[in-house]
Image (tube, rainbow, N blue to C red; front, side, top):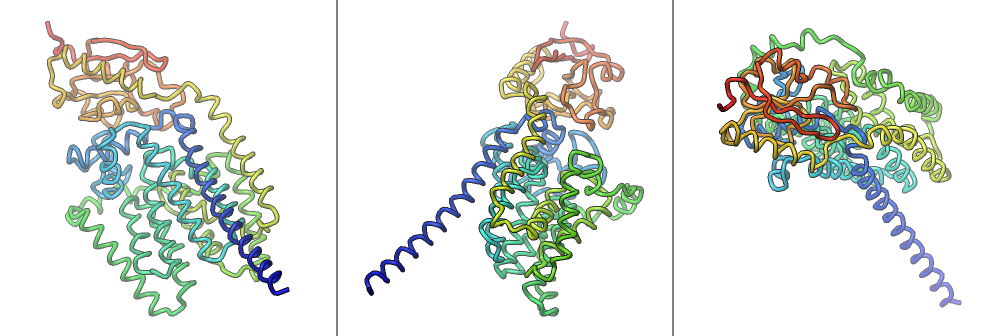
Length: 480
């Protein structure tokens, strides 16, 4: 009898161990699947995204050329990041440290971005389990968040959101493990990467308060973490102390409120209205069931961050990655995920297919592959020989998407760089806009636009990804 009882205990323990192993494996499978999904969507989500060469140029110029301002598009802060003079040196350093060994190309950077997004989701997995959420809740969260557009966007773009979100996720995890000073420091460092990441301090403070109700101790820990982050910021950007005049006369005073990134994501992109409807309905249910919910960290954070996202002046939809996981977690808090995990998974996957299948079809033949970039790089080398110019001295004024072919001294041909057009040696352009280009690329110059500014002479042409590329030099630079 005693032996049978011991065998039952042993079987029960073995079953629990096997179940835990299966759950862990399930989360690893989800994260691995998302990583493959992100790489599979690259060049199918945004094949000619201007932010990809633009932000990479910040990193390249900062640590290769040792120039911290925006040389690619010449957009001054706060109209754009303006290089890494004000923000972004940590993210630029990470990109430089990795890409300086493998090359400043698209696919290595896509792997970096996707890896950081998956890492952030893993931090959320551990954080939610630490806070007592069930394995089913975590699995549903990983699937819905990972397939959502804010996460796909961060994984497929070379903007710095993927790095700042990784810092915020790590900071929240440290706070959850009762490392408040270190957690606030890491979360606050995300503001050095991007000023919009300041929104991430809201959940960090809410979580810190929920785990430490002693007001004096909370303020001291919060102050210590923030002071350390401020010290780190000024050590990376010492020149900011001498720009008081620039700040007083900056364009910030003329910025018009437009509903923040909440409005730009949900109301200017109507395909996200179903998601907004779900979040609003979930919010109503959350309020009705508030007495049944043990922790309001996710709900309070979602509400406070939503308000902040509405009033902030710069409404870039890429910032939605900071808010979206809290909206998803809040909505899941009112669903009995343990009973409905399969249904939630099926609905999330079906919605993702409806969102992304049209993009995959429309962009199936778009976007530059490595062979296209190599082809343009070879054309540039031929032009250097024709013009008798050393590669280190060559200055290019050309189509923004071809920056990868020659990052050194490359300016995007645009209205904002028109004053620099005459300083170039080589001009790369198309006669028509790229298919699949975003509206932001409307300010970019085509060949006829450049010819109105600089008298050009044709050097060569080539078909690149179905479009004819023209290589010009100034008329007086053509060898006799």
